[in-house]
Image 1 (cartoon, rainbow, N blue to C red):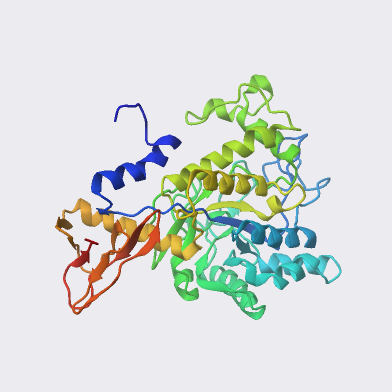
Image 2: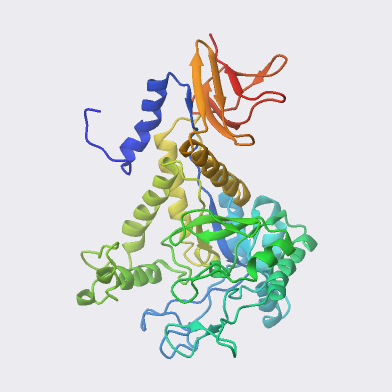
Length: 449
């Protein structure tokens, strides 16, 4: 290369695919698909609101004097739901609605027995993907002792950690799934997002998973459980289930307006001298703002482009992990849409129509991460061979290992008798995760002459 670059720069990520295709004449191990998925947590539930005067969220146990009074919870309306469905159709993009049915039922009971939001979302249910978020969003890890700040795990009489039981966790998962089935939602039992990713280890208070979690997942058929990528970027097993790391977005759960968003952002990302919390000064991986954002314009002018660039950077790096925000971000000022719109628009401006931004669901992302890990293990252990002679490509790997391959249009997969089309089209080539055909020990491709 005759220019300076690093792997995080957008210009290199744009050029990298073409460099590899040129170098290999379009025939190489691996495949890269740009993808972008957005989970919207807490659907049907209200979210607490940031207090711009006290710089905390009333109702939270660590908010001084925070009994929740004086704040109005943030919850989508029927108009917000209608807008969400219309926005999806106009932009060709599907959101994952991560729902708490029990919280919605509680809201309905407290507000006269009707819920126009639920009615609108259910009427449009086929337009979304739906993911179980537990029935009422409880903390599924240790029992929290909130008598001090920060909270700690409550203890049993023998000094051991007190955890939510297997039966209670399973009931939260099962009740939410059964409600969805009764309403005809297109939900997959194998997918789960727990509230606050609870049940999984939560440092520093809970250094281990709730030991009752894996059994509850097995009891309810869960195979893919969300984790927080900022804490655990690697996939790992929870019993028979695997984690699906999700990228948190800097579009906060406790804000409904752009002014609230900019105010909380200022609190986190400005120095103590500038009136902020100073967290950015104490954290070596964080950077403080030069000066506080204007709460009127800061969200649109600073936060939106920054968050869109981060999310697009994940897509251009071939990172399939989903991003997550909250239902509050589809309400009031509808803060999430400008970020998503910029990601979609910027991708369209950078790539041809044959390189679309894919939009996989929770389980598909988990499967992709799982396949990559198995492939990297096979490579690291020296158990992969791959070579090309003329127009024939041959690859061997451990039995059952999915092999990622990219090849030119017109490539065929060699079968015991005859051939079949290889892969699916993307970015002017064909690519796929593939295994040897029946009765064959190697994956063999026939390139176009």
